[in-house]
Image (cartoon, rainbow, N blue to C red; front, side, top):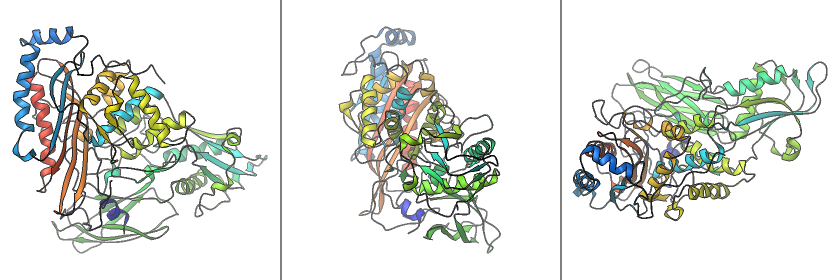
Length: 573
């Protein structure tokens, strides 16, 4: 089975794409291959506690009252007005088998303005990322930077020959310099390349995915090393590798180059002629055999990628004429060996002769003990942009792989190694914020595990707490803007009055209902901050779970309903 088709067979999509994601289990999409496989689930100050009681009633209230007075309506009148707008939506007949959870509160006081099932548990999908990024910001700080060193084991003679090994020690940097623009900031596109195969709208950034490795290799050369007689190794022992959740790469590793995938861009030619295939990052490790033809305009796209033998990739199928270029990804099987090979090639480009072959595997048994490794001399160090940039990437594009790394990164920074240990640290951070941690359940950092559940109240507790932090702007500005960018770019029309007035995290999780040959929308979610017509700032959390999707456009339509709810909140308050 190809990497593309196996990815599509995963039973859940924790994509966070409010409108654009193609169906997970394909029953006729033009840009995905259908499958009959059985589905499977796809250090600053402590967080300030939200000023609200367990029932959601504010412990203050002067600001809320003042805002109500300024708008000429009491809090109860505003709540009634909002209920009149939202109740008909959530009580619609089409949702008779589904479950809604909604909570809208005043941002400053956390006084409840509207609630429905606010204390029930709901599958949050990628709204989970609000919690994992908040914990990372609290534990590490917005200015935290990853430092990835290359150590040399052995002496360098006068001719620049290293009689020993180079060891790159993975730091958990999710980008390793591969998404950095000319200004040193992490770049993104509204639909990330890791969603290629799940949606036809995925795009590549312009940044060179090998820029970080090239920078390290240049430093090695500048340190005086001209030849490496030993091996080149990658130490990926920072934390225990785990399986990822949600769409995108399936492995969570402390070493990441280009999200540990190869990007394939297939561009149609003239009718009946071969399509053009481009791929990155280029490496001698893989041989690519591509045979894709150009079909009639409007025909079905049937492009597949497979790796029948390790290191040999085939690209087969047909792409319609006049179609825009198609982006697909192929996940590498061994991230450490992939990074090692790319590093050897980068060293050679930088003028360093390397005796070791990039075609062989990373030999972890050659690594020194981690304590001994830290005592070796450094030949190079790559520093990442501030954590604030990485959190923006995760939240804007709903990056599952990077979000799943966060609990493990927290564990590693505390001298631990496992996901359980990282989630324990996250739990402590959430509890310090005043979030009732007994009303949340997480098995990952992205929102694609079966055990991921939250209440609307716990979500607003978190959001209110974050709004009281000195670094709130980092969190707030990292969120997608409704109708403008990220996963909310197309959620409302350009003419919508609420466009640009909402910053929120999306969530989408889909299971395959094979019995009825349809997708089941496990969760569509949206939670964040909004400004209303009166200037009131509110916090909201909206979840709808278990919606059968009977028509091809149903998922997009449900997404638009959440956009409509934002418009109603904006207008009623």
